[in-house]
Length: 420
Image 1 (cartoon, helix red, strand yellow):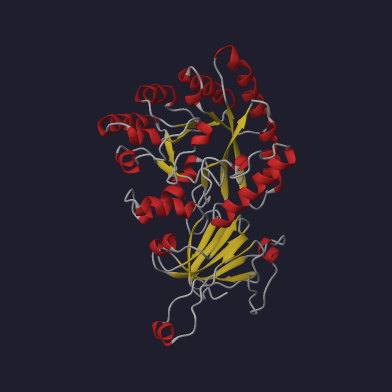
Image 2 (image 1 turned 180 degrees about the vertical axis):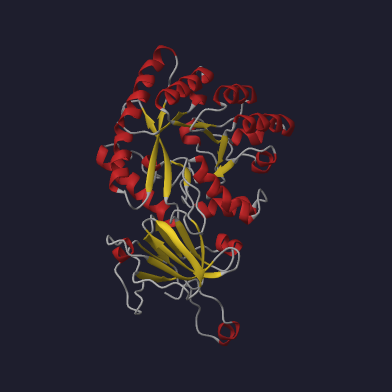
């Protein structure tokens, strides 16, 4: 398998255009040719000025811009990653990972690009502030966000350790400083504070002062605490999310059901992690359980799905792949393939305050093309991918599967992941 961030879109005359040809500054269109949609249609899609300009039957759209051949690909709205830890990613097996500004920025950038290569054109990353490093990690993530502009949207969530009592005064001051620095989402781990409810109250107060979204990193194992959080957070705009929520799966079903109904009434989104909880940030080792997705959705809770740890101490084999999160949900029977993909795409985008994406004219050109003919096969063997962000092809992963020459393989005409 080869990975490349330099895709080669085809020009109308059949030649190859440079990758930046899909990022044209002259405003000309990009045409995605011969793509299959989830409803079975084969279409051409014209992109321009960061949006989908037209969708028509294959061969019906003319353009003087670059063309990308997507025959054999399924074209989907691009997923988003609602729960990442880019600053600590890629540190598994490293006894003393670097904590300098340059090192954290490098890790963050590499992790964000890995998420992008898998198809997530927007990433929300939880960043711990305080302790001995203060705001250094947040500063590194903000610098990475600037350098990645035009490739992937990276949003940091400021995560203080303590917010209550005399020990929490510094954390509260740092949280306000983090917002001033550029953290547009505030959150944290109430499970680590001696007064979890007081912690949440402090987060909500800062969010209300600055108009920030809230994303709480919690195991959600205490139904009484969740009930109080729902009462406090209900109606807050631009919105409240919490996750990973694995503790909900350890509650008696009746208790979990009542708690889910209260979360739904408050409009709180639960971001589950099918790969397992990020126990490294929450503190203490627990069984790697995902939130009870089917139960939550039956109660009316909006559920998004994320990847969580990406090859760090919490999960040394994490992949940071939204399609894997969807695959796990579908394979475990928590959702159909279509519902599972919605949790890493439309529901994740909604949880992050991003505009809706459909493969229709007028919608943002945030797209993912995956080798395959239907969604279930794409979730099963989604190796070859083409990623479009703001109307540009920004990443391509090509995989070629070949078998040795034999009469058997010739007779079966076995498929290959890619012809490129």
